[in-house]
Structure formats: C-alpha cells, structure tokens
Length: 146
Length: 203
Image (cartoon, rainbow over all chains, first blue to last red; front, side, top):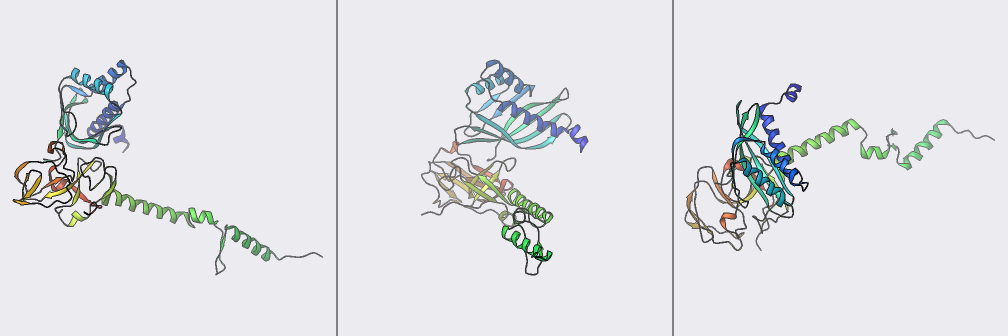
C-alpha cells in the first residue's frame, strides 16, 4: 500500500496528469496577458510535440487543433472571453495501457455560469510516454449515440 | 429536636428530583437508569450499539444510493415538458436486472461512468425498423402514438433496422432541429436503469 503511494502505477500517473491538466484549465484568469500566457503554455505542455484534438460535441463549437501555437491561441482566447466556464473530466476509465502508450476514456463536462445547458461529451485520450513523462497524443470525441 | 432522615430516603428523593429534570429514569422494576435523558436521545443508552446502528444505516444508504437508486438532477430541456430542467429524479437499476427495457420508458444512459447520464425515452426496440417522416416516428411501417411529444420539428430519418442489442432513444422535446438533439441509437449495456418518476400523465 505504502509502496503504491510512493511509486504510483502508470495508470494512476495518467489519471493524475489529466486531473492536473483540468485544474490548470480551470485556474481563474487574473486578467493579465502574461499570466494567461503562462497558464496556456502550462496546459500545452501536457501535449506531446505531435498531437491532435478533434472534439465534435452536439451544441458545442467544433475543435480541430494539431498545432501548439494554435492550441495556445485557443486557450488564450477562451480565457479572455469566457465568463466562468468550469471544465471537469469525470469517470476516467483506462481502456488500454502499456509501457509507452495509454488510452483513457472520460466524460468531459463544461458548465458556463448563467446558462442552463451543460456541454457533455465522451472523450478518448491517447497518451504516449516521452522521456519518462506521459504526454497527450490525441483527444477525440466518442459518440454516445450512434 | 433533630430529625433524622434515613439515607435511603435521601437517595429516593434525589432520584425523584433527577427524574423530574430528565436526568435519570426509574423503571417499574425499580431499576434506575443513570444515563441522562439528553444523552440517551442523542447517543443512546449504549454508544457502541448506537455507533454500530449508525454505521449500518450509513452502509445501507450508501449501497442504496450508489448502486440501486441513483439520484440525478436534470440539466437541460431535452425531456421537457415531461421532465423539467433542474428537477430531481431517481434512477432505479433493479428493473433491468430481470427484464429488458420497454418502449416508452424513460431510461438513464451512462457515459464513461454514471456521474453524467442522459435521460431519454425508448422509442424503438431491438430488431425493429424505424423511420421518421415529418416528425412522426414509424416502427416497422406503423406510426407510433406519442402523446408526450408536443410541437415536434419536422424531423426526417431514413428507415434503419436496429441491431440485436440496440435501442433508439429520443428526448420528449423535439421542437429543435434533429442535429441539435442529443439522442440516437444506444447499445443495451449503456442503459443503466429506469427513471422512478416517468413524468406526469397526459391531461
């Protein structure tokens, strides 16, 4: 038990990484461009050098990003324009894991303050281990309804 | 002249006084309970048994509300007017342990877990051919009576035969374009349970 706490398994590391990324995304904007840029860079660091994000959820804007600068731009504009968006990643399930690759499925939920509708989408994260650190390689939508 | 009061009398008076204050109880058998009333009400006569009882109640509540009756708060308008946005419902997981879901039932559909679920109504069953023409649902060529749908948008869907474990589910609010309505075909393993409150019957 203690050993498990000291040396977490890859599965726990991957889940912790995703949870940490969500915490960074939810970090309150202090209004300054530099602080926002720092947060956007920190979030972008969770992604590997080659990555792609393809999110297509009903009722939410479509996302198709595969470039780091594009991701930072998107995060910066989201931080500037958003009025209290809370993102959460619920029920992460590890679908497959090896020493260098992992696939995790989770339910992404975005709540905009003042709006009744909640954007929900099932997401599949493909992660790779680069230099002993897990990085996100791909984020895609899973269709709940076919 | 000195009055001598027997020690037993003093003890009896003191007990009577404490009885009035609710600090002790004297039973018909003569047994005196020295546990104060407030403590008996709050903790019980035997704290160990009370603790055990509380733990048992907690366990029963946890099992019930985690695995049998899942409490949900409805967020969104897709099931209106049957289920209102912000209302609370319970998802009963037991019915589908011994029978399959039926047409017309409002069911909960899980995502990767049960933290977020969709509440939808079963419209078509496995192995059925379903088609939508001008907002009207046809099952195996026969129109489906849906009194719960008010002001439907003219949805169109070409005929589709459902698979062995597939169900077609829709929300009751079909006043929006079909592309904006989160619903469709789900596999049986995604159906978690049946909503306890199935909405108000039609007037």
